[in-house]
Image (cartoon, rainbow over all chains, first blue to last red; front, side, top):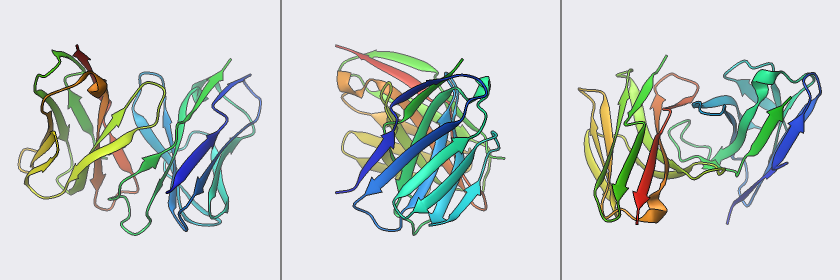
Length: 115
Length: 111
């Protein structure tokens, strides 16, 4: 069975500090990977997606970057956090054959508070 | 850009009632429409999707899609307290690089 693990579960960070969030998918080779962001009370927005190792497409610009260093790992990062980065960050995967018309399997998310 | 509107914003119903949730989308080039369920502090979980005009039933869930009116609805039969969650409608649009989500409907089932 496939599992998705996100870390950390929660972060409290200062404005201007760096950030690194991660997720790992086990039990599925070459999945499509996604980062989503949900501001408190806001809509779930897709930030990045990756179809293969080393390739990441940006969907929404939020002064964040993403990387896929391994087939099963997806990293979200920034060098300088803004207050507007606060929210709930979700990693997701899909089977990788049907584009966006596929079931997304989400992780449990990381709650980020920027002070 | 695709816009997805959900109604109502929130809904409280007694256990056992039929629940109806609505979703309107803006782009007629939309492909699949998905419904996700999200419990507090958790990631969304896919419930059901539909591509063709008409309806699709899975267990207690039925989804109706009307492409002419750009509208899709989700119906939950015999609702249970464990169905209490936020329900998200998501639309996949041809040529788009993303799945577009609505803001969600907060559903509370009272025992």
